[in-house]
Length: 347
Image (cartoon, rainbow, N blue to C red; front, top):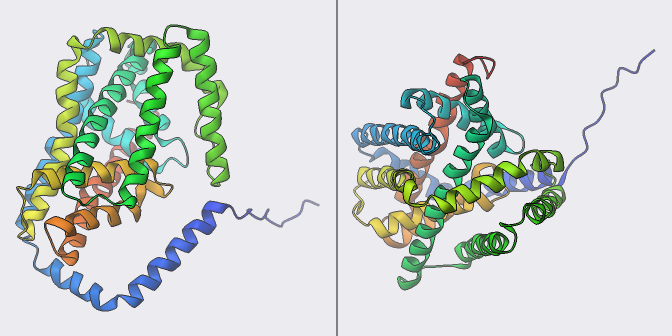
């Protein structure tokens, strides 16, 4: 007779880490209950009509994202209507947020699968997504450098920001050297890619996280990646429209942040501070071990805003509202879109 006992789940390092974070959060809330009341009072002063303006700007962001993908596809002579990307990217972003591991891979795979069902060549679909992410991170790193330089001359940069920034720069330099040494030799490119992915997976395993990419997946798509990078480097002039949409992708998020600062009577025209706030937060989302940088992102954004523009209480209100537009709104709408599209089973 089979045993009716359920197999006990082994406690992992990340479970302990999250429990510690939860305990610290409860402790801080209790110890800072007076400050929490101040935050609630600050929330009451928000000019709610500006939340509607922020929603409209978020809609523009989603439209820009759609045209961003359209421009990537057109570079490779593929035609897809912008409104098809509007719903597709919502569903893909949801999938990337909720995937237990490799959310980035799940989102990109969902978009490629949709294009394949439309009869588009799989190799071109892969290359279009490589164009998207290569251009985006190029623009992001440029704006990150500008933002960190701004914080440096304003004497506000801290170890909390420097450490993840150095990690990002180290990754960028490693990739730069990788491209110079191995981009013209596919065999070296593939073996080096396997080594890098293996190191990343080892690090994730030590943190109690699941494997992001396996060797089989890397080998399967190594050639497409190799060809895609060559295509991007040799067609920079043709990518000017793609670069514009990548730039707007970040600037529009800064616009949402500006409107929310305006909602609490802050200096919404301090573009340098707001750009630094958003870019540093996005950086921490990439390198943080918490889901979507929860906790870490909020602390960093509050630190920067409260150093220049707002009180701590108003800064916290702005950050929580910003995360509503950046995370929770796309998550909810993405879930609805994903379900309406049949969970990926149909177009």
